[in-house]
Length: 327
Ligand code: XIL
Image (cartoon, rainbow, N blue to C red; front, side, top):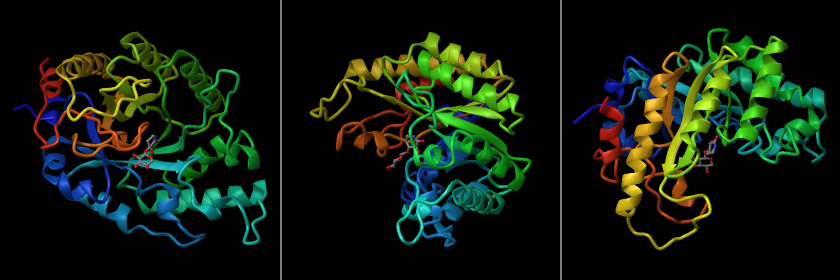
């Protein structure tokens, strides 16, 4: 049977998101098929700094150690986001919202502690995650960061990260990244950062896709647009849901034959595009490893099973693995 990371050794890294549990339950699959890891939650601010000044690195250290032991890279995820931030971050002990200066100090301290700890072990970071609004009428997403610091919270985060590890590749990461309106806003943001000489090296396309959307054409245009800025592109959180976004059915025990076929075709087409852009795409990471565990089994419909990967619930290759490795 084909081995994913070997098929792509001349193209880009092949990564998987892992957590405390899957690091063990999928360890054989990870070692064999992948050469990069991302922590699904274990490097998010709420996990790393649950109380101000009190860092908790045990879980993320274990993921990094596993990667080191098995010769894998690590993508760091994530430093600044509107979700999964610790409670304390935005206010003082009396509950009053802190001011810009104080929040920037906290941002700097968080970023630099984390990035320095993993310097030389984590070579790319999602510095800012999902800062763009989905609504076409709005540019940046409403958030505490935007409220308290202002629009320049984004560039500040990149400068802090770069100062902590000048050798790390720094990414802006987002979802719906191939949808034209959002794509153009991501482009506009990143272009303005580059014009301000902000140390940014890549755009992360999360790639939470499904068996019908986005179109190959829109994916292609997104990659081209981001690459036109002279940046790397990484596919950072790929999964291919067997359900359309509007499909809220909960009664399926297995994917239908039609879903499986479509999924294999879609994976084939995606990887064909990725190979065409091998000069710009430096890594393709799945948001999991095999169908026995995926965050999609709780999102967007709670408790609904999904089967979004190249390996099945028993870690065996699916038809889709054959399509992406036959070229
Ligand atoms: C998700 C994790 O997979 C879940 O376990 C967690 O409950 C919520 O976050 N975009 C991102 C990821 O950048 O960090 C998210 O991960 C999925 C969407």
